[in-house]
Length: 201
Image 1 (cartoon, rainbow, N blue to C red):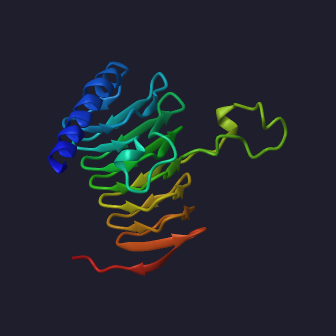
Image 2: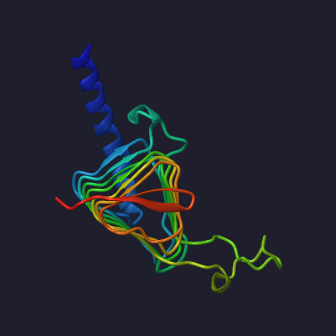
């Protein structure tokens, strides 16, 4: 039975790679070697922007491939010309959303837990006048997000615009990250605060 499960898993993984990766590359997404797609992500690449996925990354868009399950497929969306999403090698992500109006850069070896949201924009202006229909990019705040190497972000975390999370840090599940987190830190809460610094090894 276990042998059959392994065979089916490999067949499914091969199927997703053959049916998902070539169309994304044809649409302009830069995908390095040995990237795994588990399920079909939702990808929107605005003209003049870029999405780059590093070698051996795993994007999980299928609840059967994640112990916690996911709320929706992985979403990768650039929202303006000049925007970028760059994901480093050996990073894994499950059912999260990355929405970039400026820049979201994720380092190598990161773990992005189930249903994490990274958004470098407020999406709407803070000015209440005509907010529903005001799409003027000069009135909507944006600021880049940087996730450095080997960061672990727990499930259901929201990372807001302008945040840098230092390498080797851990963000506890359900946190809202509103300000920078230093290297080698464990942070949690709403807003997320450093609760422990871990020594480098």
